[in-house]
Length: 273
Image (cartoon, rainbow, N blue to C red; front, side):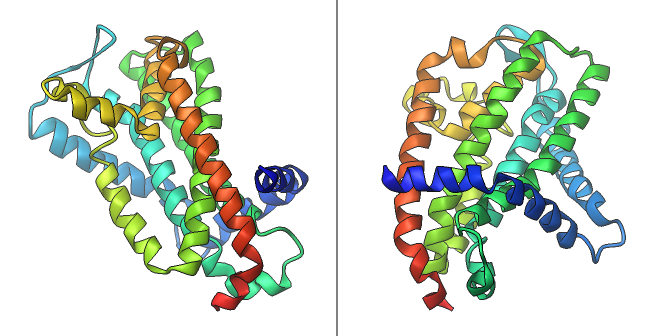
């Protein structure tokens, strides 16, 4: 608990620095490309078109039912795919955030715990922009802005909390054991197909045990929350309060463990050069 309090204080005290470094991270990442930061939008746009073509067009998928409302596959995919991109990129970049900056650790005058934070925030700006684009597209498709959009604030905050908790763990383990990053990359690619991003898990209605296990996935909780907000179907975090409790229980456990791990090993990070 003491480690968790220490990490939280470091985030609050250095929040301004986190924002500055995240903007620098985003700009430096794309400075050598002719199109610059436009690639942050182009790449996921190409991906979503490919998945829509393969899973939607070629398979002639029927409309999907969400809380009794019929929704076309492209709209259903769009409402969750950019969240997946944010989660994937932040987790991957966060896991190697400390290891890839080991040489600059001796020159730092700020706590190491903010390194995963500003890496996540650099992806967060892109996510907000893509979320805005998704909202505009959905307006033209027929899903108007509703009061349910307010719950996006909650789900964005919940996503950031989950990402930070995971990154504290993975960034520490990846510094100690380099193979962790490669294992995480492979695991996340598999998670794309087990989080309800590309296909509705209601297809597993005949296998209730498997379906219930997938519903315990915190990413699935966030994805369904985004869809409920964008399609204006329900107050998801209230209607499914039991999954809300499970989600925050998982986040708190991950954060406590990640904080303990980070604080315990960070004084030795320089030894792994």
